[in-house]
Image 1 (cartoon, rainbow, N blue to C red):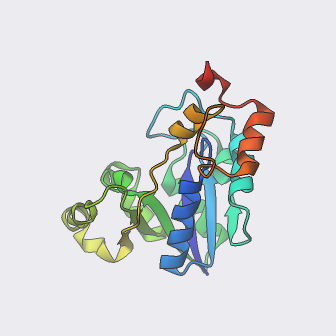
Image 2: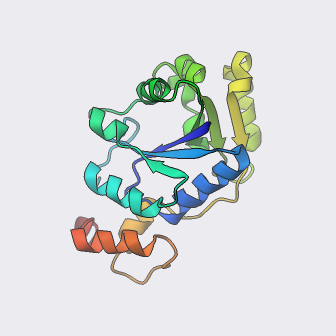
Image 3: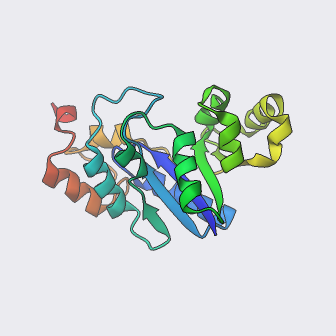
Length: 201
């Protein structure tokens, strides 16, 4: 199988996340997309991070089609979530399948600073989504400069960006907002669990 790995804090998961995942599935002809909520994101502080259990449950509500599988692999590991560790575990679980690791353009431009980037490339093809219009050329230049010897392990695709972030979602809760930003199921879960109330104070 061709398996995508789509990680993030998903705090909360929203329709922008889902559109990106669906676009990648179509463009890369993936058979399965693993959605992987992080335990502790190493690249940013997250003082308002909902619990791992809540984010896992919200992901299951958002990514509810049978070609998605929400994985608790990083939540069970605990500690900081490094991509190389996750891919090593997934390769053991799916030894005969082809893995595609999905990230945003901003993350790709720091890839050389990640833990064991060469091992990541041994385990999976790195797939980047353009987040800012006109950035594609810069992403190709980055790969040419840093990884000319591994260019076959990178895929850079252009998508129409979805102008929404999890921060916007949290700030809009309880206010007049675009109802299409998050699914009814996720919004109901947030209200029932009383999540992100500190953001409303």
